[in-house]
Image (cartoon, rainbow, N blue to C red; front, side, top):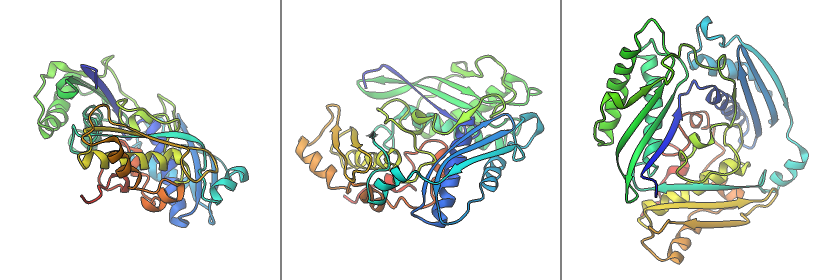
Length: 369
């Protein structure tokens, strides 16, 4: 980490792109409940009073797409006419069976696509995630909780942006926090800012034992006004938040998104495997910071390349680290799926506040020392 300041952002669960991710992953979960070997590559687009589904699914039973879409929208509190988007919005579905050309490779245990994937870990937070993205996620999650409970004048959608100060590669404090959240304009903007400072920012800074920053270092809604969020004001599409989904820009990212893809798609399973290896390297004290890259070719079972970078923080010889890493998990496509138990319907929750740093996911488990 050579930057003296580093910024990461997150988005709330009601952000249009995240609405799409959650719909796509809810469809994936339903297909996996029906048959754990279902193949899914589903895209969602949302805009004012409209949802469009498109993609490929191979599943032995019919999926009720409309019911899934309605349930997701309702759960995100798009429930007022002023939002111009709710569970009664028009739903158009254009879904067909997976291409036989792709199925040939996946049927034989090969990758469902080509590509490169990265996993990352660093010892600057308990989650072994970069501090900027951890704080950004904590803030968006907290704003969503406040919207449903203490601060009901808040509305769906929103963003956070956190600037962390670094010295000699270590985080030493917070420089600035930017929050964006729609709210009922009958409420004074300064009250909203003060409430978010009190109920969101201060508890999170305390949780991570960070020095308190003054309220004047907080920016709320840069233009000063945001009344309506969601798909009516900003069209959303599955897979457009891959930096939010991963490491907030601190680490490299692969070429594809995660949501709406079953685990034969290495964009998803390969990235989870790389995170698992990187986290275990750091957790076992082999390095303070680690990035793992793996790459696949469509139809091939095993990676065509794999490598590790510890950014000069290694505590053991390169060979010791590599031997440890490559024996943690079988990196064939089937080996990752079985080793991390990825055929479970667990993906809806990954589609908000990032895919990494949460202990309930199998790719976050630390091998016993």
